[in-house]
Length: 561
Image (cartoon, rainbow, N blue to C red):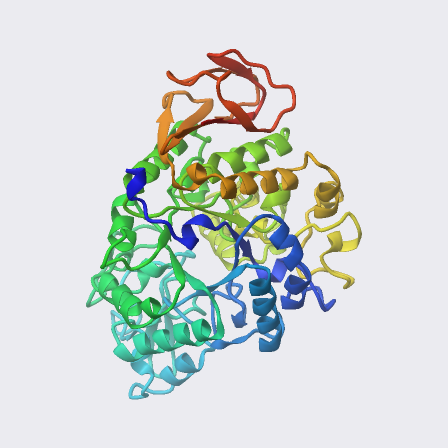
């Protein structure tokens, strides 16, 4: 199988995600910006990554922090100018870093000129760019029972024309009608605009939502995202993605990674299986982020390593030789991973273990800003402290469902997306070195005096330097990139053990998810004394040929030539 895997630059790269508002402030106004990114390009390159993925940089009212786009062809003044972007693009390319943009085409901002035109009259040329409908019961109720992914109804009434418009997210994010060929042409023109400028690809936001079932029928009645069965993997999704691929993407040396809720390996293969009908290069999924929750992090349950291993084994084995995985454990939509799957008591050890756990699997690794220094949840205590529209809406929903303020705030402190959006902690100085302004745009985690890049740079055993070592190892060994994945000891609820196999090499990866010592028995055929220990997060390593007693959150990687 390994001999049949096609090599590609996007498979061999590692990607660093920047959420620009919180990365680095370069002009002293308290908001992260492109000048700040430009000042940190050498740092990003030093990590051993090969690409930067920018969360949206476009003009936006920021009702959903840039995922509500008002102008797809210009940079938000909060982040700088187009000249600033081109300077970052050129600076990245000069350092051998590719640049990936966020492509958000399921919806726009309600301030986009298309929507402002569409709401003027029923016969406006832009009316059919969106979903406008008459309501039910004399127009008193929405056209159907669909619920927003951010809680609440998925419809908003507009008095100008007396009709409702569809928004699967915030009410300020009206959904585009991709069935309109003019809308699809607009999308293709936007893609060409950025690719012609030199951008190297796109991360495509909730891309499986862009085709809705004709007639927009009622959905299954649930509090959040009712109706999803009628727009997730909609009737014309494959047709439209192949149109984008054929008309635009195939004409450039670029890559695409989709984002898709409720995604499975079987569904993913319909989009990313390599061959003439391939629509996207990779697909982000959420299943591995559900080992401590039921579908969404707000519905918290005890962490289950068995559940996590089952998901990884499923994706690793079903895609291998057919398609390519996109691996991540943190991003702008997820709370910090140490609070979820790791341990604050063993912050450094668990951060290193989690890095090995996912980066040593088959697939392109994505690293989110601050992850490489072990940033943690901030744990805000009052709903007024939160900025995220999803957090505020979900708080209101849980209160309506009868949850107390105390319990709902506990869930928010664990689950809110704002946990990932606190400013990056660069130093132990004022405002964590993020800004020279009197105050940053958002709360800074109080642990910045200990957890920061400057301190990590000075410590050879830091999480930061471990990430560098790990990414260097991946880049230098094809087995880490292209090797076949085999899980071992599946029923063990403390250890995640797997091997990789490529040509005449084998690699054994051992990860402990335990706060106590754990007994590790080597899989059959793996003599620990014959393997070369290439990565470990503890200095004092003891073992026999058949196993070892592992320290809390210990990880080991053995290479067999």
